[in-house]
Image (cartoon, rainbow, N blue to C red; front, side, top):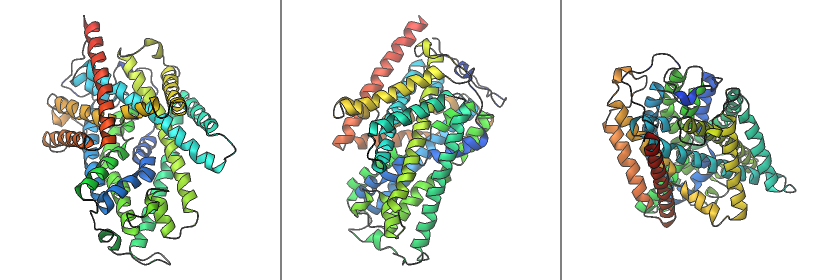
Length: 466
């Protein structure tokens, strides 16, 4: 395959910039779908449950950890938004990496992200099945896995509007839940909630202080917070199937800052103010449940179980969608088996089936070889999002030097300084991962997968070009 030569002009049509990988895809997503997908994409199970590990490691300083990693995510999303608004494509950053770096980069970033999303589908199906099995213990968990996998596979085989509607309502419920939590939490912090008194700064400065485990704890909290932000990239993939791709991406990216600040940093501040960071309930059953139980909210655990279940199902639905579109884009660009390229009714159904099949394989591996093969699979995608972010930063750096800033609907702030700062921050996080044995193993496995994909992509591009 010959590399596509970048142009110096940004398309002016609302749907311009769509490459051949997008031809035939539907455009059934409305602005309300995209807005809610962007809003809900930042609220995942990692926030509701996984953040407990970060709090236990960093103490009240977890607020700083989430603020720092949130700043990095905002920079990455701004860079991705700049490229996607200028040249919308269902392959998103994979297409941008191919245009600006080379075919091997598009191949590597795309298939790495595909594996990450497919493994995520399996993990989310297992988590959702575990919650429902707790309510209905008479039904084996594998039955619920099969039900969820089948349902969302069928949903994604239909028109893209179905995906949009499900994500719209899933996101609405998540936004409502986190908003209600923040309102209740702020009232409790101010002592305005009936039956409660303001804790003041007791939980922030007591229990061995604001930074109880020193710099080591802060680093651990930082790493935990970085991987809680996954899911934001999907909105740039979905935007290519919206009614007005360039405008949809621009609107979504421009609201990323306050979403991250409010939902992540704000809720972390509420939690560590209202509950001692070393309370065992922060880790299990989770920080949000711990706060609601402390405030005497009846049925707090079950209420949050419902919210977490919705978050898992939402992520599962979004990952099936995102992985199928990424696979279709890669295949249409000559980076995969042509047999999966067919589009029916505006939907890449064979790519949907392939993505669901890989996700279901991940579930089977978790049952058959949980400590070996499945563990290796999880480790291979452990640091994948950081690699993808690095590709985004390099691609944006190279594109911006070719396209006049005046022609860009969305512009990266303080270019090129903040782009270089984001790349440096990604490198710092990767170095910090080497300080912990578990994170170090993930880093090595991800590096192995990335190098393998890069070599295969390079060899394929050379063979095609010859």
